[in-house]
Length: 346
Image 1: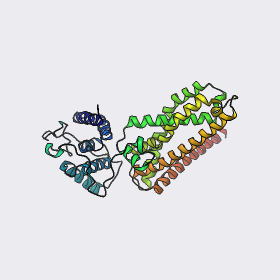
Image 2: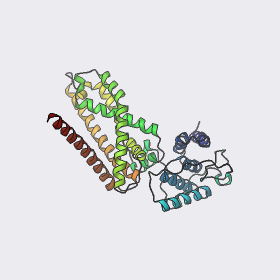
Image 3: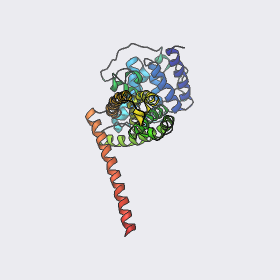
Image 4: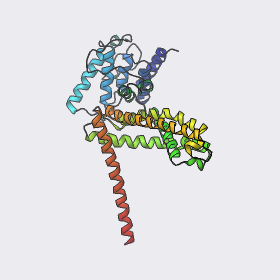
């Protein structure tokens, strides 16, 4: 089965899910469809009806018009979205109304369901088109596969990842990044002198998922709130997706940690059998890990910028503000605990 066949199947199944009222499943399937075939204007149009946020709906419609400027259904729906933004003010975390199928709406040639306020006519959908250049300067570039382009075009790759995000993928990526952090903790603590390598691996496997989820959900809330104070528009979900994909360099570093666990256990995690050669190799690995962590940190700032639709400087300021909030909250808790201790002691 070719990639285009897979994309067509995902599009058909996603459209059927949307017709049945399962917008969550439809959003996941249609998101996968545009990843498999970013040139499918119809998939972008139907994805617009499945997303929850007005900003995402607008961008789906813009992408559909970029690929097929003659898609009148997308043009009409985009005009409605822009009118709503002008009336109520743009807010990325404001959910767009849930589209309800219109009973008298004609169905498109794909046998997909009508989309209520985004209702493509059969004559307007037509065959999928590709290779059409953008007709307007404000339309963003085509979708980029983040797995491939995160290393060379990080901003565009993160924008694409955020745009077609789904929760399960975000949690999966967060769990892998969490496992990486468990390996870092084990190396810093030199825990290899106390437990066996297999136990270190089991710790990473067992605790990586909960740790990653905790970081993603708490970080998403904090950075979304901090970004809004600086004029950002990203929801906690978009910021959470940005953080998950920003951890991709750490996920790549998991392979290195596993190699160190197998071949350089004593030198990397502590032990009495480390040789001079293994120590040198462990230091080389540590340098690579530092480079991956630095790149991941840079990506996290870029990701916050893309999620909130503002510049790099304000994204960095968002991280600083979130850090201040965390430190302030921790100090407040410590002060409260100290006050309680003094009251009980008195």
